[in-house]
Length: 142
Image (cartoon, rainbow, N blue to C red; front, side, top):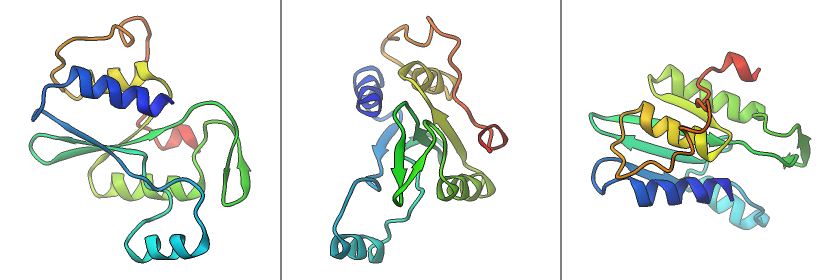
């Protein structure tokens, strides 16, 4: 739900052609055959939920983390924390010079857009009401 809310904020507030946001459909349950086909096609475990493409070849990889314990490879993961695979993906992204951010709310997502200089037609004021700041540090999540 939070991810779809963030996509809606982006779609409504960001003028076309100034930035591009897309989801990476890596999650969800799949049967073994479908999983094998997707893996062969390049689906990788741990990849961030959203990618924000910005001018001048910049990209931000956004992992959405909210409540509710989740199961990763059948193992319960504490609410809102990255799996080892997600941490590995974050390390790769950062080693290649891109930004990786964990957003825990719509306010943090909107704050990220503002921080990255994405022009907004309007602000939802979600970010203004909160001291929300997206998390970029890998050390914080270990």
